[in-house]
Length: 452
Image (cartoon, rainbow, N blue to C red; front, side, top):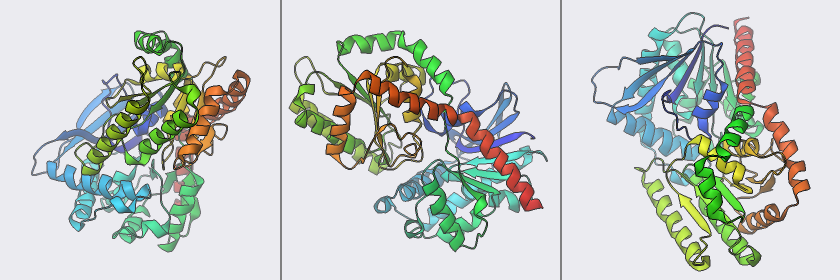
């Protein structure tokens, strides 16, 4: 295989040590091989006023060259905030009521994808294999083909894909699906997503189902387990452990987003305290929810709602020496979180809809095999089909969450170990590395079949 070219909306800063847990950047970083020459292209995160296409900034670290470009404020607003995150994100998470479509934003989305193509094309080599990631860049392959790029181009969607009955609510749904035909292979997280996308494609005249594959992403469980062991004896974990006074810890880690089911989760924890009063003053719930997209009104409203809910629950149940919910809206370094996961008796991961959810897999990897914690997981998370030995719940059912938390907090060690051994085998069977290898092999086969 030739050089691998990764294209994503954002490119991580290779010098940034405090990486967040989970997410696309972590999954891709875990998948990069030291023996694979890689070009990683995308937005730098900067905004500048400009009248012409930007010149990529190149930064090489080991076998990976990071090529980044800025966006103009108008591009950031139309392509990123309004269309990608204001239209596609809620649509793909089954939240049609949050869509606010304007044709100008759709046109800006198309133009930024064409600009990505124009600035990437001069960096490409004839034997490159191009791997495009996520909903920001659905039309990119078509834009590259129009510039004469003939390299294999694959695409991976890290968020859910809705059924045609929902997707058709997008005014340019047909145009977007038509552009996606330019990919040689499209990967999604689950069989349900594959079926939904295949049905949409079929209705738009795409007749080869092998071009849509379910290929769930994983993590690097070995290295994350080592990080957790190292961090467990660090000062941050020690301070947290001492503050708990030997009482159980429930942990949740999510970007602050309406798809994560945080309000429903807090209500489930409240039901635990109401229905199982024996846990009063004997359990603490730590929720880490870094703020994202804070400039978007829906996210500001969500943050205010969560603040009010947490304040109400803590006001009703707290004692002078116990706070039921600890709530952080700033990011915590991934290694520190690994130690927190190892310390936590329960992980509460209950999104309303999720592409995969790597936090669930990271929690499993971080556990002490001799005394593992329990995972409470939404059955609507993409990880649920793989992690069916977790305590699966419907995130809309507060009493079901309460029952699962009570079961997790009172579960015997032998049962926790039995469940964890199965979960650990699953996350070691499908890793970030195997995900990347499997997808790229399938892309290579798909391209050869098309050429033949």
